[in-house]
Image (cartoon, rainbow, N blue to C red; front, side, top):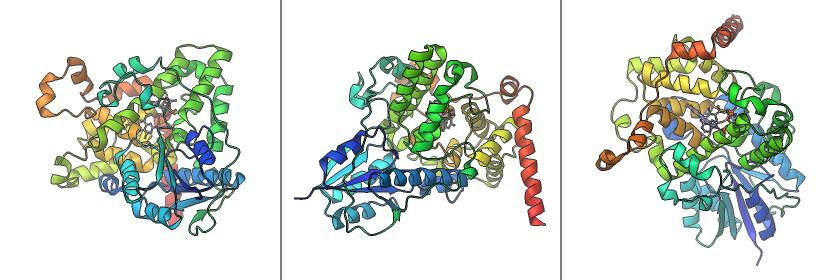
Length: 452
Ligand code: FAD
């Protein structure tokens, strides 16, 4: 009997360091490569008050998918794109093609896991292959059960940072052909024509690997710890996040380059700190997996029992989104986000703190707006960081609350940044603030001229 497989690309839009795709290439006679276009969920539409993903995020995803289609075409394959993330569409593909094998990256987020679960329930005869391959570690490498994931980052880091990381990459030189009879929306491989619109960030594995090589070919990694908090500047932090988020580049590939950099130019605090930050990403990933829907605050009734935002809060939220709060540092960061789809880590902390503490708006609105705009939107890192700043990362069942250790209690406190002090520290000359206030004035006057 012919073995026919479906490979579902989700957060792993790449050919390199893709062990699951490599496995598929060896196991089946025909392979249908499928991707699903990420859309804003109904929950996030409601909270963000945006109807769809922002232009920068949309373009970055499109470029990444185009690039994958091009790489697949080089291997004689095609990319079939599903517009809806509905299990019915996947089931229909599986049944119409009489698929025997199913391959998909294991995911940490509830909705993505549910999609696969629903599909597999309706196709019980499929042989299923899944793997967490957008992380540094597999869960079975940990010295603890996932259900006992340490509550704080520090405890997690201390238990995992010395574990060995497998970095050998399998090169894919062959893929089985696509089934002949599939008709539908294949993504035609196109050369990228609209790169200029994304400025510094172009989606896709090729651009991601080029960025990685450029970054480590200079000395930036050797001074990362001193520069990483800057609000601006391509070279000040790694800017790996957009490609990591869509899985165009794997964290193991980054780790391998980091180790090579250390071997050639020496290890120091800064090179360790890049690994340290990748461990934050790892922590949020496994946290997201273990928390399920409670990470999104979806289980708590309070948000939807009352009117979503009253008139005053609705107006403040709109001003926060457009960068018009009258907190100059916050406005500059939000304008940067709207103009580029990216914001520095320091900026994200400040605008989140402002939304929660200065404007008194529920953190979930901010998280959902970030989801719609960030080119590096990653479900675990985004909702995890927002919940961390809001003090909501470790939801505590009331009956256990009094058993909490002092350390855990402090981790559950929200983080409030003093915006004046932070401006003095990170933008003392107001260079960043002035840049984004000027940019905004320029675009307003252009819009005004256009209107005339
Ligand atoms: P670098 O400083 O160079 O760090 C290297 C890598 O480590 C990053 O690419 C990223 O993968 C990881 N990393 C660094 N800081 C964090 C962190 N705090 N949490 C998790 N991983 C981290 N990151 C995302 O990738 N996607 C998101 O949607 C996202 N949303 C965020 C929302 C808020 C409110 C906050 C405070 C942070 C968020 N972050 C998110 C984390 C962090 O801001 C970005 O990863 C970082 O700014 C990306 O820039 P970089 O690649 O230059 O990071």
